[in-house]
Amino acid sequence: MILLLIPLGIFVNDRWLEKLGLKTRLACHLLATIPFSAIHVAGMVAIRNLTYSAMNQDYEFGNLLIESLYEYRKDAQTYLTVALVVFGYRLIVRRLQGEASYLAKDEENEDATSESPPERLLIKKLGREFLIQTADIEWIEASGNYANLHIKNSVYPMRITMDKLEKLLPSNFTRIHRSTIVNLEQIQEIQPLDTGDYQVTLRNKEILTLSRRYREEFKTLLSLT
Image (cartoon, rainbow, N blue to C red; front, side):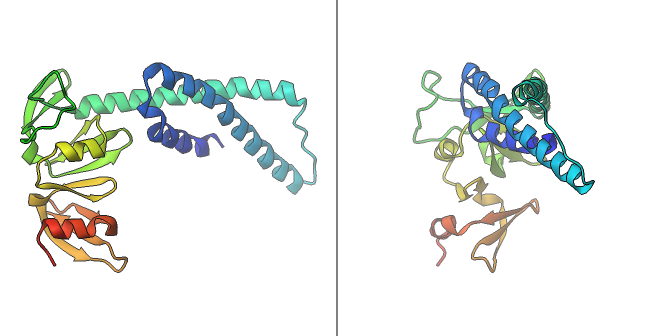
């Protein structure tokens, strides 16, 4: 049951909790231990009842309040331990991958958009900093509260929403999927699929999907009919 609940917990964190402030996120994780334990206990009891029934025996959970509190104590420890392990793992991965940020021309207003989008990104990796050109980005995928920038054989996470990043990028970048932005100069081939979507093959042989939602805008951008 716990193994089944771990992916659900990660999804909830990435979908909603990751966007919150640190204190609010910690409070939400503490509160999340309650439904986590309730679902775990309910599933555990159901599995035990089925197992005992298969052996023609009856399963007794015991005193509901006492046993529930006992199970909650264990489940809360398990939940927080798993959350700490996942957070630590992701922190290490991001340190190894490096994290990207824009070199804003107006340091006092990072949210401001200008007529000429930023041309460079600052990459921080293992205590080192170096610059890359925005034009070198091949494609971008959403990952929770991050956008993963694919540049050659490397992936750099950037803490930004896809909608905001799409507005900052130059005109040769376009959205082809809810979770994908592509550099038009990196596209090698486009093939229609039976579903109505398109298969987009990049020069590096990466295969992406152009969804029907963005198809017409994509065609207009490429001056296709």
